[in-house]
Length: 354
Image 1 (cartoon, rainbow, N blue to C red):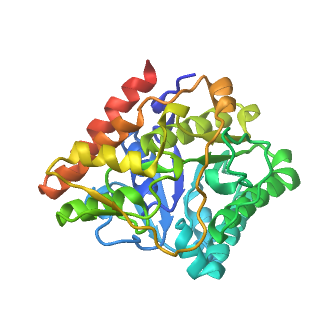
Image 2 (tube, helix red, strand yellow):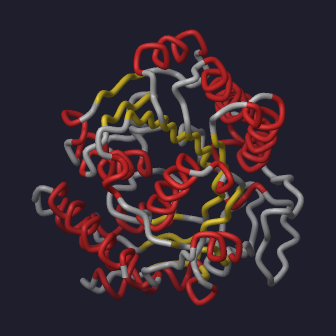
């Protein structure tokens, strides 16, 4: 089932977490589609950061605020009157959640409560999508993918707080939203890569930082398997879910969004691809640290979204790495990365339309 980006033209859309990596890419797509976009987020989390680098700030309404601040959020909803809400704001780094679990839970759980509460109080909202993670599931580290009806119980504070975010959303659906003309879904995506991710403790940004300094890439767990995908893959799915449930509430639900099995690769394999495409004889080293627990094997079963929407992944993981390298080299050469982003978005949407 293809969707029409023209649907978003002049729609009032609120994106939380818009100054983050995925949020900036999502806002870029929405602005290009002619949407009336408002972002609500903390200041950009890194320096440099994609939100400022790509120049999207001057094309949308950017509100700096804490997702934990319910009073501020209520004022924003009352003023903006959004029709569609994408909730991406989160503390999203697993290892950081071990360092400050309280902040992680406050942001990821109470932040979701606050968004749901604002939706409950504002009848203007017709479609809400809460973006969580593939890590919400109780992970047995088995060889088959998790389905949407498998138990939720993330191990670490980040993963567990996102499991709680799912439960909060489901409670609001059952208690309030089912009785109203508003459709609510959750989307559980795998690890995303793409141009402009400068976060700490993520493998591709680590690769970029090492390559920029002509140093060997340090890989702490090269044998862990993850469902890697280009950032445009889940973002286009988010847009599709939000549109379809806006038009027909029966599409609301929980959806896994991940690559095909052939693109679930080990971290070492991913870094090998990066080194090959980057060139310049870049290498990597296996240096396992004594950090906190992280899953070794995680895979999603995406049969539901493929069946309901007729969706399928468009980019193989090697193509996702190539897109990332292309963007990064444009940035390092001082070129206008917004042009590169626009080109990648247009090319991806053409694939989506096929």
